[in-house]
Length: 337
Image (cartoon, rainbow, N blue to C red; front, side):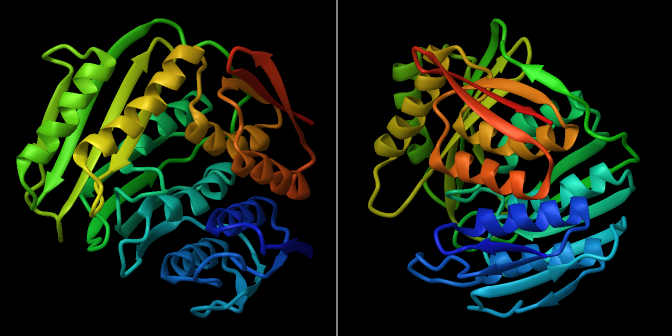
């Protein structure tokens, strides 16, 4: 059984461990879960990820209670079929999806996954990011699946829903994503639910000024059926070989202009570096590339989060990551057996 210290990590450390355990069949024990967080231990969204992994992996689980700082997880075999999980809060649906997706793909099973909760959450990949940036890369690696955002869910109300249907797919294939090619599309989308549309207009005014967007490169979507108020600004760049999606979220006592400025700064850093993957996509690509056994991509300077994720993957899989600074804000991340 693999022993993991979860003291310094957050929920992502747990989700990655669950995903790797399902992929490899290797049980693990994690102690000190989220020990340095303001609210340590397992929260509702983490428990839903554990529940999803248990269902998909027919696993024996110990310690899956609210506030628990220790978990034992022993999978007995990956199974597909139809699954539905409800987080019950605005916890991220996309993070739950990413917990079980790698194992279902790797084991070549068909499955239908419905997950209810938040779809546009701070500190989590948005449904737009999953659909437009992450899944197209997985499709290049051989994943056969469809993804749908069925309803929006914003923090703190949640109530959104996503669905993914997976078909039998071969094991992840090796890819090398070093060049993104020419820019072919830019678009800024402001989502608003039960708040004044002028919030979106103020965000988009900043995006137009900072990124030089033309009249057909921005839009407002007023969400009519969300469970509560919310706002997100999503900036998408389409290139010859992929896409990047940057998202900011409206918060109380934070101006629309400040939200937009942060998102635009992230977007401009990626544009200027000329790399394939932004910081967030880089973090998400580590596991599927490790399952393929080999691969590489260009990105911005890897975060501590990315490096710790890579170290955890190396505990479960016979691979090694290398991080090479190529200068001028450009890095190369590679994995090999």
